[in-house]
Image (cartoon, rainbow over all chains, first blue to last red; front, top):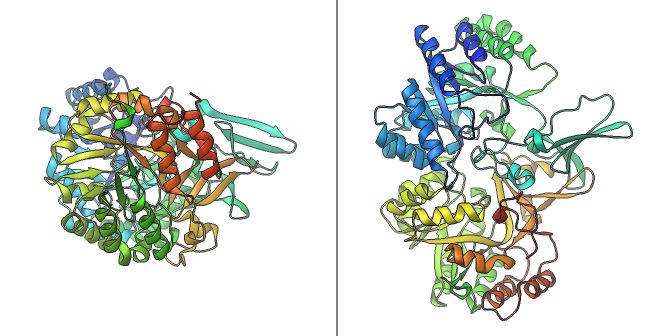
Length: 325
Length: 301
């Protein structure tokens, strides 16, 4: 299986290449991609240089243009697609059907991948995108078990890529307006979720309160580390109890399922984290690369290294295991 | 310039799990309302609920049709299981008019006149045009679009009709995991249909007691009820053709009456809102998304 690694900066891109990525994905420094964070992402020049750097080392570059085109500003997305193609991107990762339509008609030779944000979770949805826009690969939303992925892989006429490590969306990707309900900014349009601009921490006696858009997302005792108030991973009051109503502050780790995903017919494993530092990216990539290449019995030790990267943070296999539901 | 009086009133699918009989009787009452022009119904949230209402669907569709309502059957919004895919395909061949809420339904309905529901991402005019070419005759906007975006989308495909959720809690997210079952100590696979205990959804408050969200099975909805009574003239000017009233656990016939009265200028929006407060006092009202703000905001006229 291919290892697809994130790069939020040119430095992280080079680290990912050195550490053994088969492909690196990145985005432009604007709202055209779903990790539109201050100080992150690539200028046009940086992308051209990164593509060349990767090609010289046999590594592909995928450009994520995976937000939905804001009405009336479609040109921003069309130009970003033109520039990604001109820079030599090996694939563009798209979510908006009209942008897929644009790329498949204007740049018909460009390899098109479907973003997780497109929310294609079944054979007919995937086939629609393959038939209509010539999609070659689809990144699956985190809503399927491993056996369901295997079943899909047998029926679709394109490659499948799945998330293996990093952040975990609790909600079906591309179908979540929770962030914009509270802050006015959404993953689908502005490329942000629970944006830092709306985050506030305050002390309340011995407790630390984290807020998003004026809503309390969590309260932490003095013995607890105060986490970032990602909306769906907060503690709330529901059905007469206080607790993590949607999901604990966990990250995704599907290392237990590597062999199952491989035999399911999954083409590529994706690491989440364009917002992470280059050292983190390098460590995750090299550990995962070593784990993929190690014989099964030696894998546990390699994976233990990887787990230390999410130390202090609990992990889950999420929807890949049926019990998570 | 289209007048607000041209706006049609539709009743959207019941988002919650109600018993089959209650669901049927709800639509029988809707059939008798003179203010409702169209009805879209069917299970959009969770396929496990489908057997509650499925036996009553034919008679409900017949009653509504006989009463002169334009009826459409909505597809499931998150399709992952084989049987859900089969059901979606069947909807496309069997239903008179279907509303697509997933890309799978769009594939099955291609080339045939159909509606597009709020769960298909339509964020720009180019996408509306694409869908219109494939057979969409009406698109119901997803929740987070502003009036500016709506104007631009309609300009992209002005030949079809457009619907907006003008009343009701907004569908904000859907998950493979069931927060509703979890909150009541169950898993999704053995949920015992506990979402049926909450006919208007299950409240989620912050730890500081702020009303925050509503859980409805695998769906997360807004706690606020979207109310666009202040905005009907603006919606008509934008080119919106249909107002969707999304069922809450209240007298929806009265809600339709209030919307019709404001639309037709018989009462002012302020009066309409005051009347609505007596029919559905259970949630704060919001209209922020339309004004380009956080969805939970309320902009007074």
